[in-house]
Length: 354
Ligand code: NAD
Ligand code: DAU
Image (cartoon, rainbow, N blue to C red):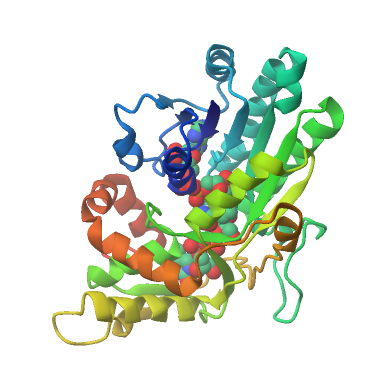
């Protein structure tokens, strides 16, 4: 079996659901259920003998040690993190605690388990750390996309904390021989995405008749990957990646933010037109820019394609259509998370009443 941390979040949740569609190997999900973790995402697995959900912190060495000793996983896949850049600007402490200290504690729990495994299981074991392209910093318009050899130049508290965790993972391989794999992926989108992030926020605000907040001039570029393509890349790296190596994951889909927002508006105009006949794009509102906002990210995913034969299945056009349709069809999932703490965040970030 495998142990997945952060499996009640956006990407981890999609990964667990997709894993159990692809195969029957059991999964333990360990998740702290912060504001970003949602048990509903895994509701379809209730009663499924292949899945065990455990609420807990990756930094809790007793709990993690006990889970490892009891279930003897062949791999740990670490998605658990604080993941939102804007929240890291308001309050970096949680990011240091989970992404840096939590990853350190998790590595130590895993190392203690791994070192005592019988030789064959020890060789086969993998610790896969899920990271981000933001660790490489920002690109100018005509720079080539990030490769695995780019220097780390993180600019936000979030990306600095992820960079620190990547360095710890690397060091645990070089110093202790722990068989680690690291993936650095570009921006994901798709089902179960928490609506503090651009794409789900815009879909939900549009439907609610609220402003669609575009930071600065809206010309910042992100490289979008449909979430199940990220999941298939992680499965492939887990299966065939070389311990100690890092793999960039991306979909060759660079888009300025404003174009992404217009695309969503056009899809909503088609799928659920406004009752007043106006276009959703009328709701676009330019707001104050994010401090230290990285201008452009772009991933060169050729190593993963060349060495492991991975390619994304979705284009941006197919993926964004599926995503908008998913949010229209899953209003229950949305309404369960857009109360309480979510409202306080929206008030803090965009001003009361938004
Ligand atoms: P998310 O915020 O949606 O989910 C994070 C999950 O981790 C939540 O379920 C949360 O409850 C859990 N968690 C947080 N702290 C924990 C702790 N201390 N112990 C156990 N669980 C904890 O994040 P996401 O967007 O799904 O991202 C998952 C991973 O992928 C992160 O490591 C992130 O840095 C990385 N990543 C994200 C993207 C993206 O576009 N979203 C792209 C590349 C890499
Ligand atoms: O690149 C990978 C990263 O992508 C992941 O490591 C992060 O966990 C993930 O959150 C994401 O980070 P971004 O900051 O790129 O994603 P976000 O959805 O917050 O913002 C996308 C772009 O849209 C960014 O340029 C900021 C802008 N934006 C965002 C919000 C929330 C807006 O213009 N308005 C908004 O209201």
